[in-house]
Image: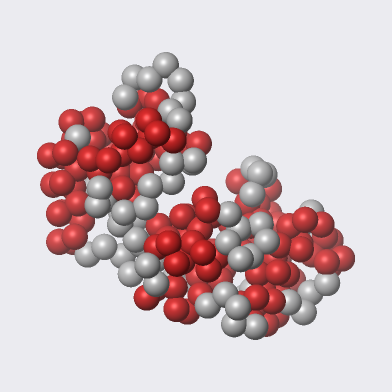
Length: 208
């Protein structure tokens, strides 16, 4: 469930007060408008497909998968019926095909309980998701932020976040974990919101 208007205003007040860099960035970037993705399974499917390939290539493979399963959308039940060979014809590598089938099988068998993640603490959600081949902590953090709208996730290993921190805080190189967490400490308990603004800062740089 997305942060409501009052929660967003509270987060922005906190970030402006806690960090002058964030205060300037919020003024430039405008209002926080992250929209959670409703289909949790589909988000994980997309995350696996997108690993280490371009956005356009991932979009093309996703569309081929959708077309193949139409008129149904991808689900644990219909995805697990596909063979690795069929998934490869849709553009997936053997490794990613095995990841998707592992995800589908674990969700269908109840080993990974996506429907219960909304009621789990963040660390339990991460532990639940990394049972799946091909899903690591970063993917689980993206799930927390973009599927569950958790407000205080800090994906310190995300290249975009690290690049933004380097630019915004005038560092000579990409920050290590300790440096990233030290800079992010004032953002708590709204590290997800601040991380979203880090990504937005990269968009602003590209736009001009």
